[in-house]
Length: 290
Image 1 (cartoon, rainbow, N blue to C red):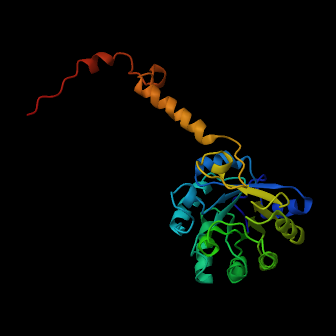
Image 2 (image 1 turned 30 degrees about the vertical axis):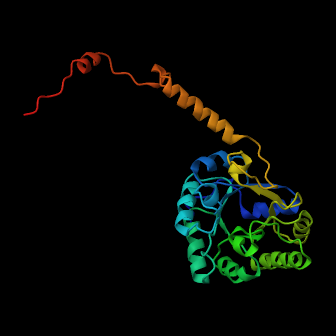
Image 3 (image 1 turned 30 degrees about the horizontal axis):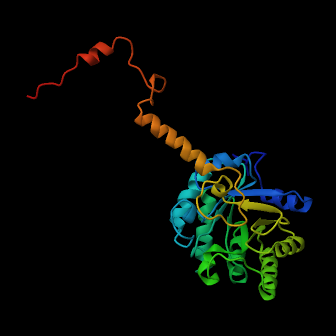
């Protein structure tokens, strides 16, 4: 069988990430919700996540629960059109992988048909059946344990998980079971650093931490958090590397002031009529109605 197209040689692949785990090479992952953010991040990070966090970051929701498959498909399409070199992972939103294996496969398969390389889903032992169904259909799965935002109501808010002995041991057991079910990597969110370090030590697959300490195989932060584009409270685990909100607000304010003071646009930003057409424009008058 001939293959008419092949991925570029510099594309990040799942086997590469797993090899990096064995070599101790750290990997970086951030979110992308549209073509602009994807193009900015793609040459920098190893994994792009079209996260259901688009709900609270971009769409104005309080949490990720209202995000639908239709919304996610829209954003996956936008990012996939940029043909990123980074591994492109799409989040399975709430209720897209909870009802039946058939629904789960259909929804996840749709992401791959749109250009995603893999999907991510939240939860431990309860989701093993769905993970196995996806892996059986050659759909790569990234797991997600700890503070799982789709469980915000059960958890009573966005709270650090795994601080009790039973919870910590259950997380380690879930992590191992997800690996055995076929997950190629695992996001660990909002758990004590020591617990994440132990999970990273015992698993052969990469762990991607967010609020899980420095020992994970890699780290993920929301694009808008890294660039300081969000206002208000920032979680403890966020480090902003720019004051993006202020920078962009200041630039937009300067532009608006130039508009109001009639100094934008100038001739430099304007188009001119061809030679000789000015007189014709100047002598034009409306036609008399008949």
